[in-house]
Length: 256
Image (cartoon, rainbow, N blue to C red; front, side, top):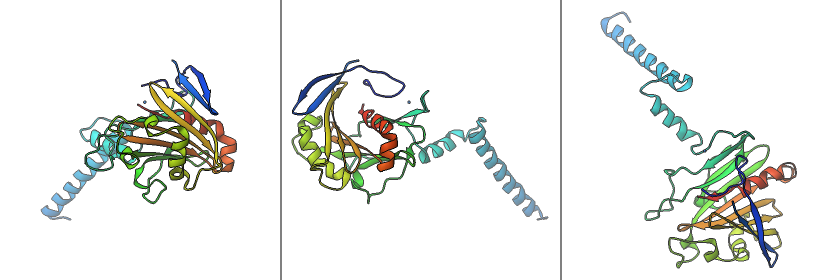
């Protein structure tokens, strides 16, 4: 895994060049009858077994059913999300066995990761959302804002990129934001792009944008046969009060 911006790690970066207003940054450095009696006893046995299973899961007592219970709980929680670090930030890494792949014949999605404050959590994805079925993940915090990840097949944009696409092959920063920005904000991005930066981490190039209005930070990159779009946003008050955290979240995104 390459150098990241997580609060538990550190990195060195240098601005290598500035071309056409785009800065380029390079990184250098988780009953009573017998039948009734039998029936009562059987029901009691079931209840006792159930209580034992729940106790094992909640209190940490060992039991044969613990793994099953844990698996069920994980499926409804946030697999891939680490415990908080010393600063209260957690790292999410897309599980290798998470479902999704945009149809038969597609290779597994190359995992990505990012860092969020402790109060952020995963929220359900709806096919009615902007980005539709290509939204792979959503996170949100009632206090700070929300984010989502779009993972889209590159064949939707070009048929000559193969299985080792890079963001540079898809196009320069201006072309990428003009083509894919509307999928993130739901409208044309003309006149809304405040900044564009090109960064390199562990040999992979990332385009980073800040748009306004609406307030949104977008990171774009490519890996395998997919394009990744990472969007972090908030309302006006959230943007004003928590911009530093939102920017840190946006900058932490990596494909591993």
